[in-house]
Image 1 (cartoon, helix red, strand yellow):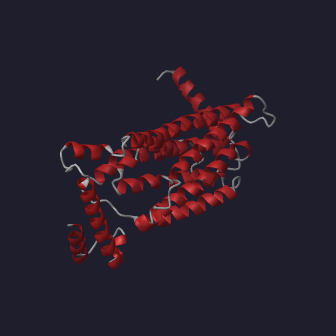
Image 2 (tube, rainbow, N blue to C red):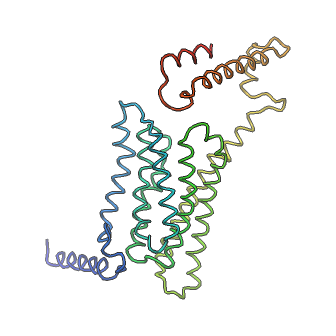
Amino acid sequence: MSILQSEYIRQFYDGWRDLMDNKSDPRTRDYPLMSSPFPTIAISLAYAYFVKVLGPKLMENRKPFELRKVLIVYNAAQVIFSAWLFYETAYGCWWYYFSKFTEFFDTFFFVMRKRYDQVSTLHVIHHGIMPVSVWWGVKFTPGGHSTFFGFLNTFVHIFMYAYYMLAAMGPKVQRYLWWKKYLTVMQMIQFVLVMVHSFQLFFKNDCNYPIGFAYFIGAHAVMFYFLFSNFYKRAYVQRDGKDKSAVKANGHTNAEMKQLKDGNSNGNGNAHSNDFQNRFQNTFSKFTTEMCNPALNSNSKSTARQRVLINAGNK
């Protein structure tokens, strides 16, 4: 290595240490993981590797974990944590950063239950990038203008984790969770507000807030807005359109029309009548069996006797 190269490396290192030690905010300088961004980057990369590669491999020959009680407790704790952060926005800036690591458990639980369909690219990007993004704000600009995003985000998370907690309680509660899609709407509104709040500094910046962070936060808001809006269109708008197109003008679904075409109807509607009767009998048998055996309403394993009753009722 030449003397010139050594000098460049030394200058780079000195400049980096000056940035980390002297130009960062003294209020958070000595907090855990705040000395350098590299531990945060390493943890985030390890998270992505685990949920996409190592976790599925470890679960390959294992049965999915149920985790019902764990999920209820975890999501209840996240609701309380988010509510506290929402209340203590300025004081809790480091804890907000820390909460981005606790949210990794959202994905860990998906992997442990083999719900790999939930470990989408959007999910991993959102969870993986947030700790690294928040680290810079906590290191250099905690409090003040930077707290707005965390203020909104913790408010949204109160409702989000409340939903997850209720959903983990089983079918009896899930029927009341019709408002699921509005959580995504709240997320998108959040990102629009963050855009407006960040980009206003391009026109008026009386507080001398570092304009680079305005670009940084605003760009994140734009990226996440389009990611979440794309998810909303695929999950709700396009799906609703497909559901409506499946119903014909005469009230028959595509499946029912296929049944008529295959000759399963005798021409006077008995095929639909018999199909409805069979479904009603199966549903009624299952309902009465579950009423006599309340334990069947949970996700726990049924006894052999209960399984016999269910099978008998469904025949």
